[in-house]
Length: 206
Image (cartoon, rainbow, N blue to C red; front, side, top):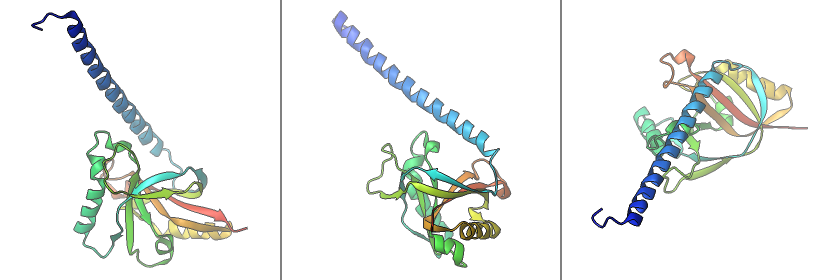
């Protein structure tokens, strides 16, 4: 400013202009994220609950947590979950990230008690993970059910219906169980209103 150099002044204005453009882009991105969240909440109010559906899903790259043993105290399990989710919670638009739980399908349907599970989130270059456990959710045919799940626990009757459906339609399991929370403690204080989408890759035996 002391030099009164017009070119230097233009340079200052250009730099400031770029700074404002970046801020606008970030705000537009956050606005779009909020629009998606509102649309998502509208969608879950009209879901076909407890109906078994078959759909083709695309391949997805996920970041898995370490295996979380059911035998560990709840405090330790929550600590593992919190550490895995920290890069997401640290991001200002964290709600855009897909998050869920992964279980062994045999344990989930045929054992009296699940021994362990993994927490996963959608892989994204914006997340600051040093050594992430990358897992590929394969493209293919998936059996899906939207259902109530109090604290993530799906009703036994739903599980029995899924097993029966698979047998009747000559299908077989391929891989583990994916549970995607749709409505949880973020959007309801009543466990009976909590919803998940259960997904399991299947293929025809014939």
